[in-house]
Image 1 (cartoon, rainbow, N blue to C red):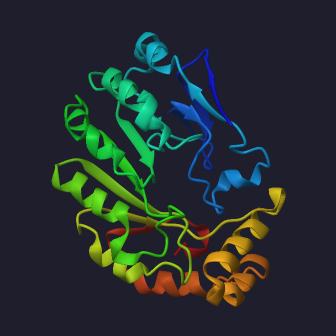
Image 2 (image 1 turned 120 degrees about the horizontal axis):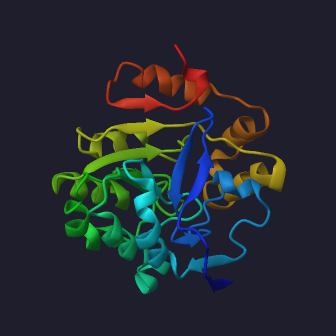
Length: 257
């Protein structure tokens, strides 16, 4: 259910795996995309309700000076460009407030609706250049290879002079044609890989397996090994394939060298 609410703070503080913390701005709470492998799926209540944080832009105007010079991330407990943004434009309103601040703003999205293209001129107007963290693991685009909509959009943003990073997190074995996707991306865009990480809490592993059986049944036996037997052969081979590519980064400790 979609609900509207008012919040007390424009920022939340998120602790990272290394113990550091980052400042998060979430125009919404919850996500409409519903990728079965999202790390949030370990929470049984994730996105049962999606909240529209109606007053976040007004709060941001009052509170942004407190974050002077710090890195700010838009999108953690939501995708800031999911379809709700078409109607409410809260991300757009937040960006208008942030464009003249002294902070480095990072936007994380994997929405495939091309809505971010409507904000190109706004993003280019930032006092401190903004960075777009573009995800290629959208459930609706996962098997499209070089025809992935977000590859097209990432390349457009890069061509327009914006700082763009691409995340294939997670890499979905066999479903994704990784070589084709990498070849289609602008060679100046850095790419980050991570393996499929699932938790038994919330039966996330079973949700992923159900999705594979429904959409890609030809890979069911492979995913049974990956999900339930912790087989990392595919990922180790992927590392060997790209370990010497200076434009590709691996975000998992199984690839530490």
